Length: 175
Image (cartoon, rainbow, N blue to C red; front, top):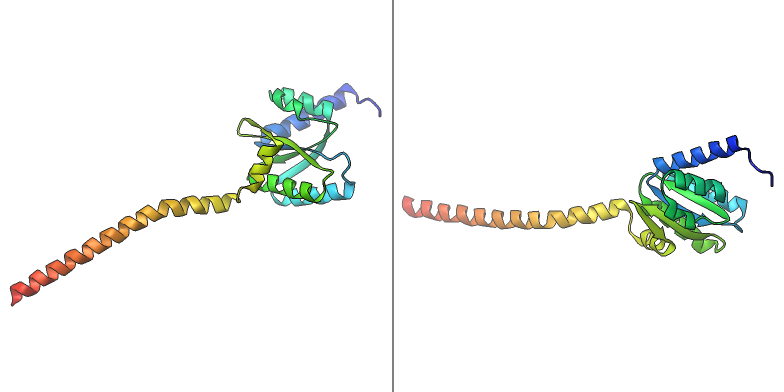
């Protein structure tokens, strides 16, 4: 393979570093033996979930990671490294990658990066098992709603009893 000129290599490093900076969630996969047609299918699925898959040469990736001060992630980068850049919900991207890796064992999830933490492949698997963000928010809201609803029921019951007592007193006085 031909060596890249410094200018081209620098532009590629800048592009990858820019993507790393713009996307808070990163997932690294090794798919050396995955067919190109399957890789394209994965790209299309990821794109629907606001994520993007890029294949990056190891040396370019390491330089981009160093440029963004993410040296601990350099250990994850192997031969054919694919990076999934995700802006929104990291559970969606991790689930797509996990499901794809179950179908095609040639793709290996190497790890990831989220909220300042380096993720192992096991962490990415655990993240993929979480319910989607919308479901988790609904559960939290349901948990917050229950005590308030209970208080409202208690107050409603107390007010009803108070009204019944006032009604009884009113009836007794009118007799």
